[in-house]
Length: 231
Image (cartoon, rainbow, N blue to C red; front, top):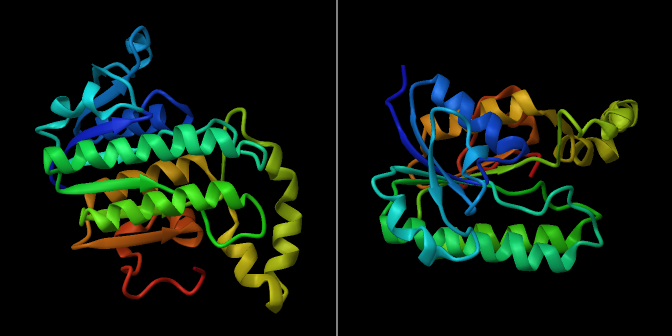
């Protein structure tokens, strides 16, 4: 059984976040969730709501401690190629502030939900998430970076129609790596991978890609020094 963690979550009332918070609580971890003023009631029962603004670390920096783990899930809903401005104003600013808050609190492990890369589309989104990964490295935070492409779940099922296309591309040698890197995962797999990341911190940095997320085997994923062949 893994050690009990004290986890601070940003984006913990969203599509993936709420499911993650409930899973962490079910595993007996202590969880605090950042919530905008007036949205505290959206925090899952059993977690402690921390009122603050994800775009301003000064509003919640002092509330991060005594967390040993910081999970950052804030992002633009339903990412699309035409949402570049939102990516810069929400996704980028929120990770900048989260890194500042985590470094201030000296958390032992930062878990960041990034995106699969490289990819032929969503370049502005990938650029912002790549910058988030770089910020974590620059601040020297111990980190797990998960890189899904699309997470299937309630209200997020439309890409399921592409499953036969993925299957076809995976059978072709020239497109096999691309299909695996940009594969689809279910929200149950995504949450399991995030929980595993929280419970098994790396020594320095771990990059987790779609094949590992799909198997929910984060703790056995290669380290950054020896990344999986699908990256």
